[in-house]
Length: 208
Picture 1 (cartoon, rainbow, N blue to C red):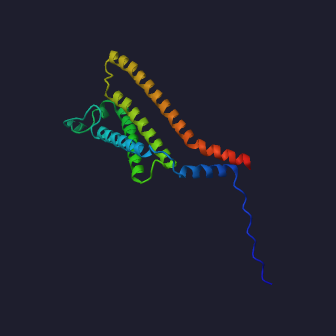
Picture 2: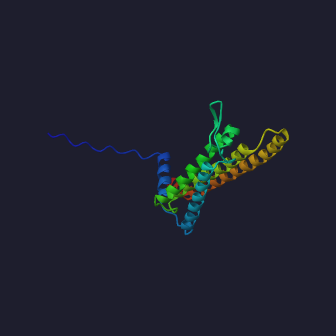
Picture 3: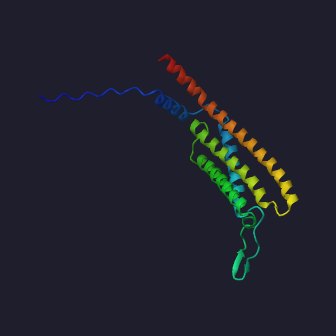
C-alpha cells in the first residue's frame, strides 16, 4: 500500500504581540487621507536643504575663521593656512561642534534622500521616518549652535568667563527646553499616528 500523504499540520494562531505588530505594520503601510501632505513635503524638503547648506558652510568656514598663513617655529609647524582657529584655541569644544554639525548634516541629507525615494508623506511609515529625521536634524543643529559659541568665546579673562558662564547656562536651559518640547511633539505625533490602529485592534480583540 502506498503511504498516505501527510496531513498539513494546523498552524497555531498568532500571538497577541505578533497580531499587534502585524496590525501596526499594515496600518503604517497604508496611505493617509491628508490633503496637506504634498505642501508639507515641499516645506520639509526646503528646510532640510537649507539646514544641509548651513552645515556644509559651517564645515568649510568654521566658527572663528581660519588661519590665513602658516606658522613654523624651530622647524615645527604651529598651524597651517586654512585650518580652523577654534581647533587650536578651543580643541575640545570645536571637536564636539564638529560632531554635532556632522550629525545634523547627515540627517538633513538623509531627509532629502528619503524624499528622492519617491514615497509620499501620505504613507504613515514614511511620514514617521521623515519626522524623526528632521527631529534629529533640528536637535543636532541647535546643539552645534551652543558648541560654536563655546568654541569662539574668550576664556582668558576671569570677568569674561563669569559673564559667559551665565550666558551659557541661559543658552543651555533654552536648548533643553527646546529638546523637551521637540520630544513631546514627536511622542504626540507618534501617538496620533498609531491611535486609530491600536483602537481598531483593541475592538477586534474584544470581539474575539
